[in-house]
Figure (cartoon, rainbow, N blue to C red):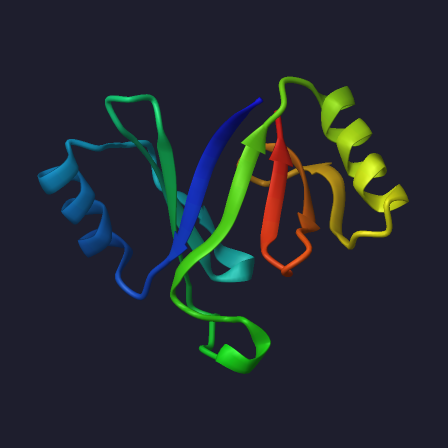
Length: 127
C-alpha cells in the first residue's frame, strides 16, 4: 500500500500550480474542470513519484466550524484494485467507522471511496 496523493484547497489554483512547478520541480497534468460543481483541479507530480492534487471551487465557502478551509483536505491511499478498495471500505464500515462515500468512479477517472479516520480526517481509498 502506498500513499497515492495529498489534496489541497486553494483560492488561486494557477498561482499554486506555478509555485510548486517553480520551486519544487513539479509537473502538472491537464486541468480537470467540472462546470456543474464549479470545481477544477490539477494533479502535480514530483520527481520522487509523489503526487499532489490542488483544487479550487467557486462554491467553496470557508467555515472552520464545519471543517471547510483552504489547505490540506484529504490523504489518499492507493491499494491496487477495485476489489481492495471495496474490501477495505467494508472492513472500516464493519469496525464502526464512518464511510463518507461509497466506492465509485469519479468524474476524473479515479475509483475511490472516502472514510473518516478516528479524528475525522478524510481518507480516500483508491486504486
